[in-house]
Length: 390
Image (cartoon, rainbow, N blue to C red; front, side, top):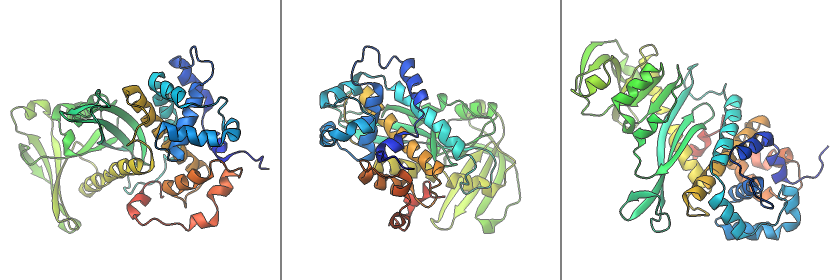
């Protein structure tokens, strides 16, 4: 029987609090803290993400307006703007980064059997980066250009469920390809990348780790064809070749054979050339795998539109990373709730919209999310439905 708890409190029940406290203790987050704990900070910042608050003043004003309910939300102390600002400034952002990884591990297990559009048993990852523009005078640590600051969000997305498994936050000057040095390749997995990651020395490391990659080749890539396989041009295929690199530098960086697949897309009337170290899967599957890379682009668009990561509550590097990691935690938490409560008919967008206006309601979370009027809601932009719409 329902006990009359707030929707926000019911949502936070899905958090593994034992693991959260382990992350806090790992970095001594509550050391010398008497009132405003790391959990209070996480709950405040999660509330800001779920209710679309734009500033610290906005967060505090809303919480004080509902001060009689803050205790039931899990916050044991009164929140002030300076206290929250200091917490974002000082508390180690790695606390929330580690906790986000805990949630990611839970979500990946839940979505492990989901279909992503290609009949393939292996794990498939899409790697890409997105730039968040910042004011250089307010964020002097976020180097990008002479008159412009930015941070880059490098993300490795598991295409089964669109769960971000690896995230690195850097300043805007860090080139995308450098993130390959931070990855720990998973043997047997596929890594789908755009041609911005075309570095044959790093790709050869992936190959030596028994991981597969699919990447677009550049026009000026020098190679020598060894032999070709038969293809069906009616499927859009143009070539399926085994090649070796012939450039002076690239032939030393990647001395083994590569597979080159040519594909023509009728819709966009564009021709693509893909390189991969997998010689087993059909050529059409290679093209379809690269097409699935668009999911990581949708992921970036989605979180920028529906989470608070374009305007920040603090200007320090620690505050920015704290906000981004808590935003990722909220994203993954909602994905976990969607799966555990079997809300297959609802998109993440719809769930977030419902939660944003019902956080202070004393209604069953399942009842709130399964009301008939929400199930019939459809979005105008069908691209957004491709995330968690299975």
